[in-house]
Length: 184
Ligand SMILES: CC(C)(COP(=O)(O)OP(=O)(O)OC[C@H]1O[C@@H](n2cnc3c(N)ncnc32)[C@H](O)[C@@H]1OP(=O)(O)O)[C@@H](O)C(=O)NCCC(=O)NCCS
Image (tube, rainbow, N blue to C red; front, side):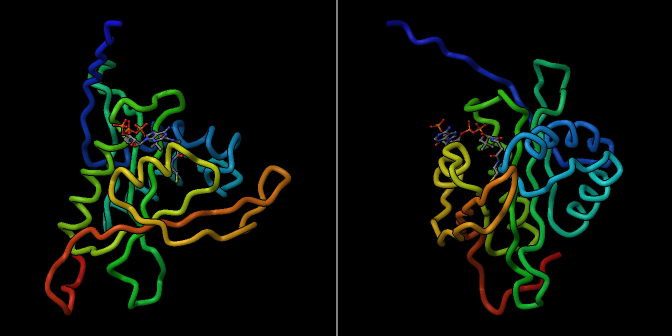
């Protein structure tokens, strides 16, 4: 049987606060309808703009544009601090969201590869990601991008009337000489 080849043209770029409305719209259904995120109230556009600005200052926030749809923002990925204690400062927690229904067209990989390159360039050494179980797409993407399993917190979050487990994974962003230079 002939295989249908679908080529989706997408571009990754650094986010600005002007992308807040698009990012908030992508994220909201994951907040209201799923336990993929443990937030309970979708952030406002202003709150999203603050998150973008904070990530851009210290880590990175990237958006994915669909070039066949006038460059509309259809996904985003960002890094943030893993934990506040000083010795953790070379590690970041990463997250990624594509608009619902846009799956398996390479956008996740494109966003994450660019994000990890940017975080490595800024001096970060390790990325960690937590995913509420089950989430085959997230586990598959993280595995495909070289993340290794760390462990699973059982019954760690309560949302939509039940407990949820969260699996953690990690990957090296950059190998470099020690002691590590300050992230910049
Ligand atoms: C997770 C998510 C970002 C993946 O994005 P995507 O654009 O579909 O991923 P890609 O098409 O780039 O896939 C890259 C690789 O990831 C893996 N993968 C992606 N979706 C998968 C799935 N449903 N099952 C198994 N593996 C999957 C595959 O190895 C895939 O490579 P392949 O298509 O060549 O086999 C997307 O599904 C999403 O936004 N999900 C909802 C939000 C979410 O769960 N975010 C993560 C929170 S922890």
